[in-house]
Image 1 (tube, rainbow, N blue to C red):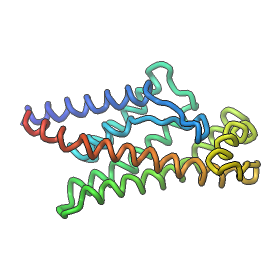
Image 2 (image 1 turned 90 degrees about the vertical axis):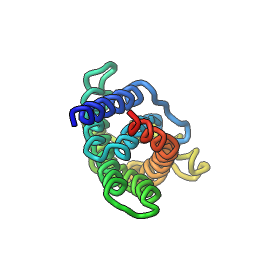
Image 3 (image 1 turned 135 degrees about the vertical axis):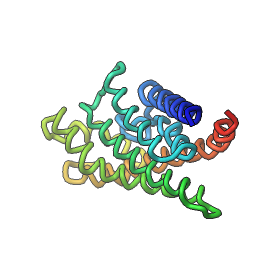
Image 4 (image 1 turned 90 degrees about the horizontal axis):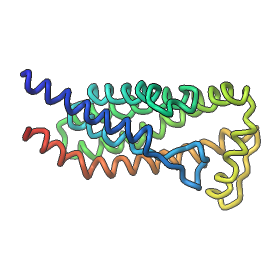
Length: 210
């Protein structure tokens, strides 16, 4: 029993450490999206943890990723707004997906779990940006003025819409959700699902052999 507990704690620590490194130091923007939306792959080890060990172990990884981001350099660049939203997004993904994979005994549970990952990810990203990211970020850094965000986003909006869309204060949120948040998070969640599908079964075999 003790050996199993030690093995489980060790794997949670490994997944959390890899996730934190990816979250803090391995990220990059894509020119078709606003520059403040960074691609990072920190959810890959967390999702693997959810499938291998369960949703509650993955929940620990999600929370540790956020807490240590605040401590490690360069720290938060969003006034804690981005990290809080990422915690909510992470929990919305790993808890239902992990429960489906761990508890359901059906033929296509892996496909169902991956579908839930993508759907939950995109839905929570929409809600987080509407109610947390944009309102809090503009309040903290721009005193409620959305003009700087519009300026940072319009080039990407024009690129992804083939020059047909340019946001104003009245249309920014709609443009941002449909031209940035939804396609960005669909792309990122699909990449994460792809890598998780390739890696997690091989690691599960390794885990069971140890």
